[in-house]
Length: 299
Image 1 (cartoon, helix red, strand yellow):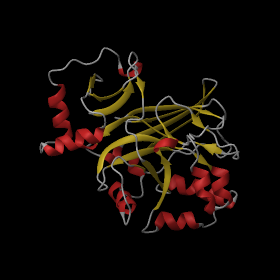
Image 2 (cartoon, rainbow, N blue to C red):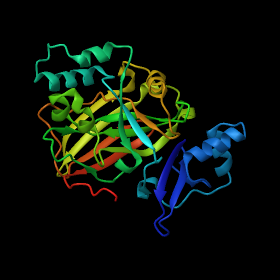
Image 3 (cartoon, rainbow, N blue to C red):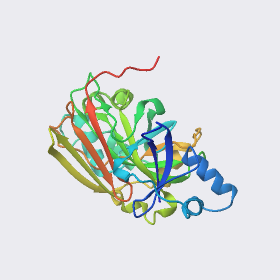
């Protein structure tokens, strides 16, 4: 069972909906997934049980899932991210920090083996976009890549209520120049996307067996394709969520990205109008085009 949000074409209303395993879409009488979860809790049943009860006598909508104008599946008040949780990520960060001296030991080696993981604030609701919306390239970076990641959707207690797809855009040159530049290498307007759906955790038997695929297209030609599996993670999801909530305030609906194991070749950088597709088994495909235009921030 997956949860989506979409904009209804004839009314421009935002609709919350459930997607069944046969890809049928059923609208739900709630505004957010969090409301559904709270209602299920009040009835002492699971979220899936509540949704199943709600849609059992309903008809699916006429539009197919791929025809809908999808929005972010949850308006996450904050998106956090984990770094250096995969061997491949450690190697890429070392390459950036040492100008290609792969045999050098850096702080990335230390955090990979340390008890405490790297966790940083990646985005806020206003900086995050959904499926098929444009991401922005940073104007002062010459080496930018997507970072395809599994996202954990958390409640206020740090419990995992679902899984989504995330793109943690990154400036490799800025981070490699100095680790203190990490916030600038990671955070700018439209530097993060999540979607297209939330797979409810109740329906996931093994979260360490998600297949992840990233494809980058330029002028409709495939420039890069990489694959990974969450079984390659160095750290556990509950471990990462536990460090995030330690002495912290977690807003319900917070998303925690769990790190990447897919890194394009070192000579590759994103360009204007590149299309990024990140697919995670059971969740769907998150598609975004990157643009060089400067974001106009809200007043």
